[in-house]
Amino acid sequence: MPAELVRWADGDLSAIPQDEHAATPAPSFRRDDGWIDWRRPAQVIDRQVRALQPWPGAWTTLDGRRLHVRQARAVAGVSGVPVGSVLPGEPPRVAAGSGALELEVVQPEGRPAMPAGDWRRGQRDHLLLGTSAPD
Image 1: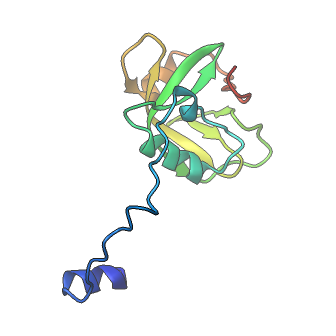
Image 2: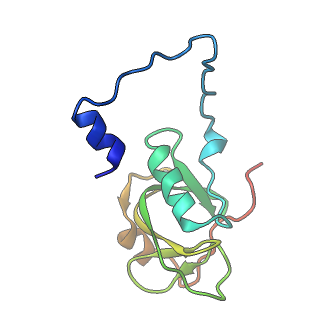
């Protein structure tokens, strides 16, 4: 357990009020903030997926249509594979800048969320997810 958490649990830390004059509001999320840049490390993308649920959600494109990534986790990748490539096998994994993102739950545009393995079985063999920024 982190030392600061232990100190807090023991009552050894005292609260310090926030300086309201120094506080700044965080900007609201926009839909484009959810776009996944596969060139980034898988661990960063994993955090993006978790942070942006339920809105705006993390998403990529496949054949010009959005594919929301509702649940995923970072895993070891395969070298020499273009970023955005869906690696063969189960469960579906997508090559990232470093590592890979294992897809667990996805939501194709206009469809309900589904297990990523079910989605992958309905796709053709070679998939390359959108790697260029949205317009």
